Structures are given as structure tokens and as C-alpha cells.
Image (cartoon, rainbow, N blue to C red; front, top):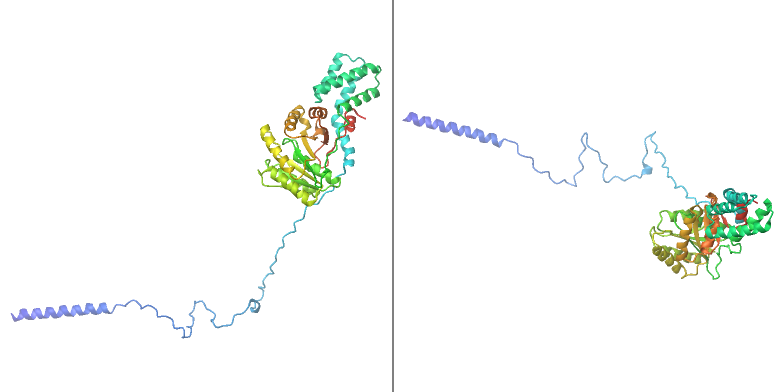
Length: 402
């Protein structure tokens, strides 16, 4: 019994000793470090260790960049500030005077139109002028777009005069044909472009016509003609429906020092025309040229648009001139356009462009007969100064040769 009790006591002692060892080893494990204490701002800064970033003391006096010496050989390159290039205004051109360009253009017109006159003179010079020859003369005139009624009148008068004349020398035939063609061109028409207002306002000229006939270009060239005659011009870019029309007109104006009044693309043409005339009055300009849109989708839309431009402009002053621009190469199709515009606005004059590019110069006669208004200007090329006043005598001389 005692032996059992002794064994139990020894077992308890051994277990207690082992438990103490385990607890002791757990207590000796390293505890997590305590949170860092708040820095003492009164204590001197610690010395930096190797690899730490050194900081300048906060109480050190700051130095300016001028006081800091750069290492030798590392002088800073001077900073070069590029100044913007000056924007040069476009040089203002001096257009060719009207009188000077007529001589040059007359020769160009002669080269393009001479076939008509030569053909007529050749037919009239035949020894026997029978019915077949007179039909050929009619065909020649119709091919040149003279028109049916003017052709019939011309042939009838020629037949009568040739019959009375009897003998027909080349000079007599040329003189005869010249007189009859001049008669068809109505030389008594007043062909001056009216740019002088009877009021204390600029002369106001509205330019109309189908897009593609050279309307905007003609407006720009007309500005050159007026500037060459010593007039100051303001341009109104009221063709707001054709892309770049205003840019094109402004370029023409800048070349001769004429200012262009324009608005947003697709804007109200009447509003731009109104502003152009208003600014022309304020600037004391001599002439205001208004370039209008040339759409022919419907006659009603065209009438409303041009009618509105005319009404709005006339709040300042009445229009002095309405010029219709036609492409001479379109021939009889140009007459259809002319009729539509004549029904919409009161046309006072006609500008025929590209007259040097067609042998159908008879369109001059036909369009005057159709509208009852004179051809006042003709375009004879793509050059800036290739717009000139129309002279019936020079035109006929170009047709039949001087």
C-alpha cells in the first residue's frame, strides 16, 4: 500500500515539473514591439545612417539659384524663346485699268468668234445666192445660238439688201454684214454698270445667277474693275448655301483691299446683305456688291429668297443694278435660266462668262432679245482681269474680222 502511495506522489511531482517547464518556455517568447512613441520635437535630430537620404536642417538659410555654383563643365544652356512669326497681310494688287484690258481681250475674242463671221462672208460671196445658200446662212446663225427670230430677221434684211446692191465685193459684203449684226445687238442700249447712287449711300449691285456660271468669281472680278476705276468696294457674301463661296469671295476682296461681310454657312442671306449695306454706309464706301445664292430647285423658293434679299437691302437704299450672270457655253439652256431669274427679280444687265470658250457668240443677241436688257460685261478668260465692258462694235469686228 505504501508502495502505491509513493508511486502516485512521484507521478504528481513529475507532471508538475513538466508543466512548469512548458509555461516557462511560453513566457520567454518575444512579444510584439510596442508602438513607436511620439517624436520629441525638443530632441536634436538623429544622425543619418548609411543609405538614408540626408535632409537640410530646417533652420538653415535658403539660397537662391543665383547663389548656387554649378559644377564645372555643366553650364546650363541658354533658353531660346522662339518669337511667333509675324503674320503678313496679303499684298494688295493694282488691277489693270479698264481701257487697257479691252485691247488685249478684243484679240482673244476675235480668235474664238471669227469662225462665225468667216462662214457668213464665205456664203454671201457665192456667185449665186440661191435658196439652198440662204438656208445654209440660216443654219450658220442658228448654230451660233443667235436664236430663231433674230436669225429670220437678219436673213430677210440681208436678202433684200444684197438684191438691191447687185455687185458684191468683199468689202461691201463685210460692211453690209457688220451693219446688220450691229442692228441686232441694239447699239443704243446703255451698257454702263450703274454704281453711283442718287442718295447719300453707296451704289448697291446685286449679282444673281445659277451656281456654276461663275457668279461668285464674276463678283470678285467686278470688284477689281471698280477698284481699278478708283472706287472703294464692300463685298457681301450672301451665298451661304454653297460650300466655300464666302471664302472664295473674301479671297477676291483681299487681293484688291475690299472687305467682305460674311456670316455662318447656311445662314440667312438677307441678313448678310443687310449688314453689308449697313457697313458700306458706315465706311463711306462707293459700291456694295452682293453675291447671292444660285439655287434653282423651285422657282418659288428662289423667288422668296431673292425677293427677301431685295426687300431687306432696300430698307437702306434702293438697288442700283441687278446683274444676271450666264455661261455663254450653255447656249439656249442659258436662256431658260434667264427667263426664270427675269420672272423673280428685275434684271437690269447681263454678264456673259466664258465667251472666249465658245464659237456660239450669237447668245449675246439671243439673250438681249429674250430679256430686253443689255449685255454689260463679258468674261473672256480665267485671269483676274479678264472681265471687260461689252462693246457691240468691237464684238462685231471680232466676228467678221476688221
